[in-house]
Image (cartoon, rainbow, N blue to C red; front, top):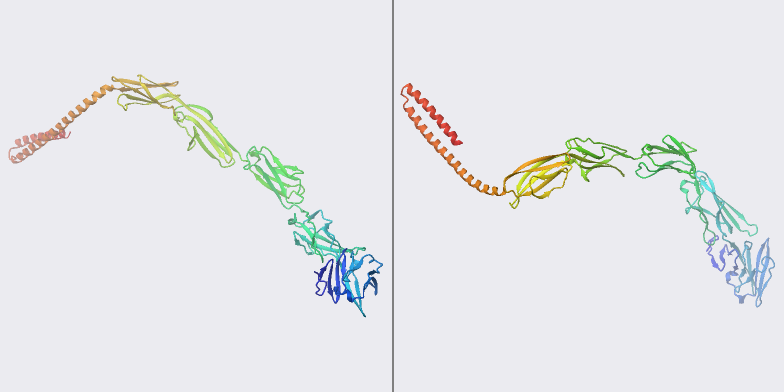
Length: 569
């Protein structure tokens, strides 16, 4: 369907479109195809027509004959110009015109003779052609930010009427704004075919966001489907605005690692040569943006920079910290000391950060760092310290041996559980491990492991008489001996029974003495009371009698007090 002007409805008939414009029929044909031009819109009836004739307007008031058909006769071709061999008549009197071209855009007239009437039906012919193709040519190699640059030219070839072209970026239409977008269209007509070629030039000021943007052009012709060109992309060039220094290394960076410095600039094309500032030293690199420092040490800690060679003010910096961990333990290795001596430990940590310290003795964790002001045998063992800081670990150790002559700490005895033997126990300290010997033959019951310089030795004996037993301990530094009295196992049984009888007699004797003393005290007390009463009644006697009586009374009181004390005892 197509509207040419004032509301006309066109129907596609084979290769032609027919519509009515201002009372004049118009047929739209497609370039290069056969065009059917109807006579009276196909309403002519052959039985009513005596003569049908087709002619065309040659211009300047002249007309040219094409063909004639008389009733009961074949069609007679009269064309001898450009239409010779191109025209024929259909059964419904329509004119068939092959290989339509733009010069066929003129008025064709169908003249019908029926009886005494002659009628003419003029038809206007219009020829359309869609573009043979749509492509972007003269493409720019690159676009520059902020600079209006010719991006390319979109060409729609051989069309009629001339094609209208629209530019798109990422499927969004571009409209000329007089600033960053300029679009100029031109049309060229082929002098031979009369077909039009439309060229549309796009000038564009790029932005960073246009990297990888797709540019296309399209046209929607009067007839046919929309044509869209293949997309094109462009490299966007712009000056460097920012520089970033990247550090590529293990995290955390420790001594012995390698570290690579990478200078990244946001320009396009990106710079390929840089200056690296390495703690006061400048190194120039070309055709690369990296610099590697191998086997770093703590001395490499500091600030690093990179800059553009052609613009040293465009620079970036980064602080690099090389982590390290050192420990120093004095003394280390095997240490031999005598019991009672002091051992001074010196432990120092050198680290780039906070560290953690742990101590173990014989693989058992200690709560704190060991201190030895007075060594004992129990201090002997393997001491190890471990210091950690992140992934870094350091260890140091020493093995302490405390030596000395053995000393018997305890020598004891006890009766066996079955009552048929006695157990002698000798506990000694010393290092190296002391040898234990007894002055009596016995059965070894147990010897404890030699731990922390201490050993316990137990033997079982069955003494038949009272005796003194010696325990002797010795090592390369000296010896110690202690004695213990051991009574006969059988004598102890008899003594137990005799001791029980003696204890009963002694108890009875003590009770009797106490009761006797109490009774004596009571008698003396009563006598004293009677005497005092009589003395008061004879107070009229002479002074001599009074003095004698007083002395006797005093002696009596002392006697009573003495008996009272005995009674209490």
